[in-house]
Image 1: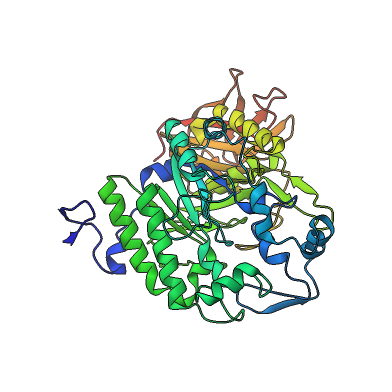
Image 2 (image 1 turned 90 degrees about the horizontal axis):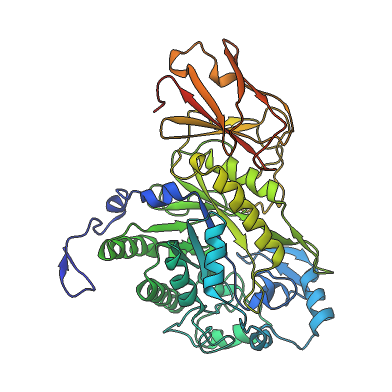
Length: 486
């Protein structure tokens, strides 16, 4: 028994060790949700190139090093030259703050768009590597209430999203703030005096900084009661590891206090950051090859700034977004559509269009998505390009022939046709009639009243594809068997 923050004794499901947390079960709402929105916003939305690494890379004028302090390149980062050419050598990162106005930010419009996209939850950046808090922080004045917009943007977005019945999560990237800024940054120099920043890139994280990180994290949890907490990679450094268990126990027990199922998420480059079974792993801009037994999640960028000389932005095609989404949910994953808003609080039109297009397709095929689970195989046809977490591949290509994915829901099997062909035959060898449990009664094309022609034999199922299509994106066939599949 532990004293709760509600001033009364409370029996908790999670005691004082990892073994207790191993009993954690991912809430059903998260398993069923499948689709979320990740809002990447902050001061870095001001410059033409919108990357949360702007404050770091702009000062790499002679050498570049990674998060561990290892030199990875000699010479200036391209974004340093871009910043100098477009804003001048004397403009510092913090000089962008007055331009971060969010004057046109309308939380209700955003939440309505997210709902229209088919998303069931959002994750909004609470504080990124730069340390700028997008909420009313009790531990720093470097926040959106005291500076820039002078509004609690987090609170506004959370309230609007809840009105749309969306679950709301918050993300913390603050652990990396320890050595995020370069030695040339005035912010880094000021934080060094307080023992809140490294003196050199490889310096171990100080206890002063860890205490500050912990206090800011608990402030987010206690103030906003998020349904989900998402943590970035730097928290996996050895100095933070003693706090992983403490964080999980605190947050999960808070969820019990709030009487709702909460989700703790972390990510690492190549392995589970926290012990397996204690949280949900996020794969940043990447995916997996096979079905994972445990629930996982992946980010899909809708836009990428691909040229650090011109600031050119590439927007991902809706078709590719939907294909990635299908592949991920067929392997027991959830998807976050990753957006970059403008500094005035608007969402770029190209990103809005993708969200609206995805929403139209999801609405047609929702029976195959929400509440669905994996089948015995994810399908056929593998990625032609694959790398592990943090690969940051903008394009993950699919083969064009006989490429399909499965989900199951309410005793029915769903086949997503990844190929964009207008007609032909879909051959599904997995569904031969040699096994009586897979004797097919009927096949429907979701979103269409047209009769589907098909034939089942010992070689498999053949579905004859009509030129008519309910959407210009992936078709989804609903298969009913003589006996419901489990």
